[in-house]
Figure (tube, rainbow, N blue to C red):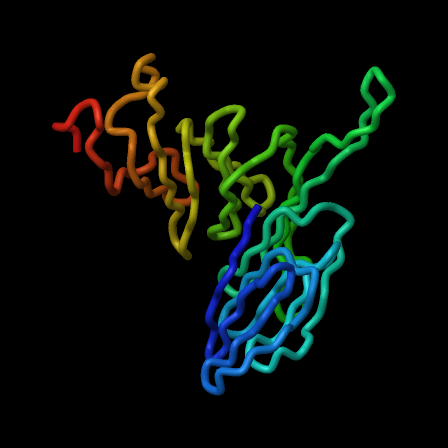
Length: 231
């Protein structure tokens, strides 16, 4: 789950202390508590958006005045601001009962959404089934990218209708991020993968992937501990 603990926008520095969303005015060195029960937040030069219970609340990042709030029926799994829009991933759970009569919840699917920052209007939405969960979510050009442990792949969900980009087979991804143009991820070969020779060299490193492409580009790789000549 995404947790951004400290972001500076204009003269305000936002951070989370415990479950409190706080703001430090760097010009006057004064601090204030914006809200409580906050789990995560994102911001740009105009808006700060944060999660509170079953809602995402948006405020002006300079004046801290309310812009609006968006309520959700499911778990808010991911939140980000990109290209002037708010992107959110919800995770849907369903109730199950085991053979002894105990109830538990199982992840069923995700809903990936795009909202207008100013009006809080839903612009695009798409559902995707990932029962066993996803990790390291990022968003670029209306496309969510993430890593699936079960399949050891970098998957994506494009919000454009009938658009499906290739899945990237790449095990042991440790982190994914993006800018306005490309997706970047870090992979690290495990000792078992080296012994079983299930991966090819180079492997450890930072990779760049253009949205829609199926051919990641290696930007940097560190020498292998078992092969000092690898670079």
